[in-house]
Image 1 (cartoon, helix red, strand yellow):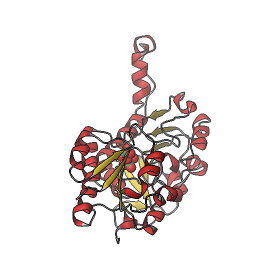
Image 2: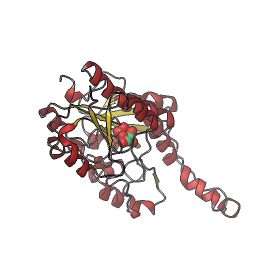
Image 3: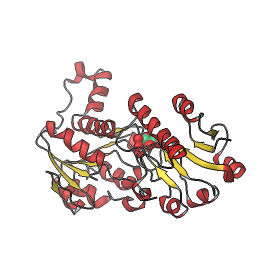
Image 4: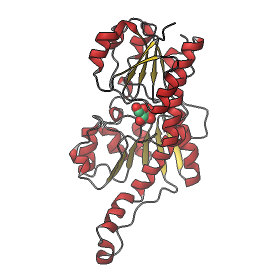
Length: 317
Ligand code: 8YV
């Protein structure tokens, strides 16, 4: 029996390739473009693996009429049109939970780096200013401060649990109130006004686009600090730049940007920001676990007709 065709969008690791080649005839976009690959093989493709990839829109999905499963490497799947996928009977899977620890650690790392001026102070030392100019200006404590979580899913809850040891007061904004020992805010702007730090950890996509707008940033204020570890689209980046430049917002720690991998020059020039190249989950251990789960979803469906971690929209398919 011939193996089903699997289109890999982006790159796969050797470990992923080793596991996949037993069951699948793998077509890779490495060295060729997605358009021509789909034009040439569209009707033969039954499985897609998407890793570090751009959008999969309805038109892309319609050109693969025998597609059964899209396995997304990552918990966020805003790059995939899931409404179209569900209508076309395509199951979308993702990699929840295995990255909760890493992404929450990155959020806390950014929080501390911003509060304690880590990058500024390290640059100060490297510029040999310590002997000349003395100690740098004092930084800010996170202890006894209010940290507002925007989004309270699995990663948000992990951040909250870990932050407890820092003695912070944790509050959250989400679509609905949860049974947790933290104060809930239905009104995001009100939460921003009451918080010292905001950590954005809500899914991306149209429903959260520019959720963090000028009003929210002004409410957070000149002493406030915004951490974004979710998707660049959730924060209005132009409004953020202007708020930081004029001092209406104090600081920002960003792992994600609106037009990745491009980061606005204006942000690069500021020393009240800490910038990371979307590395929230990027450790050897966590990326391996994500790769394993991405592959497992494909193999499980091929062998049993069931995926392991479908996205919520596809759970009843
Ligand atoms: C990955 C992520 O960098 O899981 C996510 O949603 O943003 C990150 O863990 C990304 O998925 C890589 O494509």
